[in-house]
Length: 381
Image 1 (cartoon, rainbow, N blue to C red):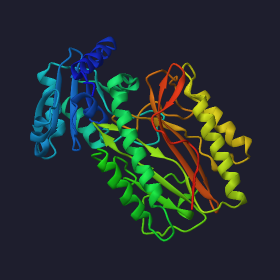
Image 2 (image 1 turned 135 degrees about the vertical axis):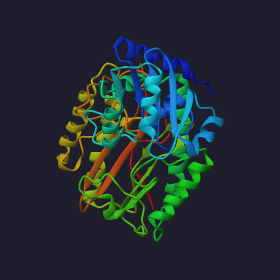
Image 3 (image 1 turned 60 degrees about the vertical axis):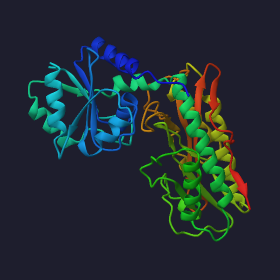
């Protein structure tokens, strides 16, 4: 496996800070901790990079020995209790940083909060501890660094996608009449673990499995698995989220178990057209907004736009709440080196629901799938 130069990552971020006259960046998101520190960090912490290229890591004392042993990059400082902000302030003062300081505050244009964003209470605390320091939203600088993936990163993302494919195929084989959503989710979990995944990262219940009416809530993007029994002639959503070498995959392809009726066939034809349109739309130099417009137009061609969401995916890396956000608010342009979980969401109450989460890398020719599965409804039974 290709190695990652974490010192180069810190230097790249430091150069961006210096060019913007920013004294330091304090990253509390798990994405930032994983990207800059190179070790699994599930608890509260912060990575502090100064414009001079210093890198200090503040992390919860109860887990810091493991993090140190597993090779954290940066100088480690423990905190106990609720003293994270006090330790961050101490580190900034020790480095002579007076400001401005970038914090993980918000993702403009994103509906969901990336895990680890600074809380309101923490923000109030750090302002009180450093009243003469200017604090700004620092998300953009680190996200610019994470947006275009290196060869080493794409290698890890391919491994995660391979584990996702193995999990999906196992889940597909487990779908049959009378089994529960939970049973299928358990089969999927076992398969991705056997292929190296150390964590199902999704906040929506890990591996999602939903069947029948549970696929078709209006605008319903969440199907945590339950004891609901799978029946014939219904859609099944399988959505899985492995993590390998700190890099995430996200894979969901619709399943239909049995024989679709006329309304369901119409929905399938629409969804498959949208998925194919989005895959074709990904070309270097195209604004994300234009790709989104293509997807919306595809829903409109079928007269089913009220059931299709204008949300077509998100970035993948050390976080899935990351750019490029494939929605009309994005100001990103499709660029080689991006890795995207390309999406297509269709939820028609009384008929069924279908979801695409499809990992692709972007090269000079367009979208390159990281999985051997086709973005088409899987018909079984």
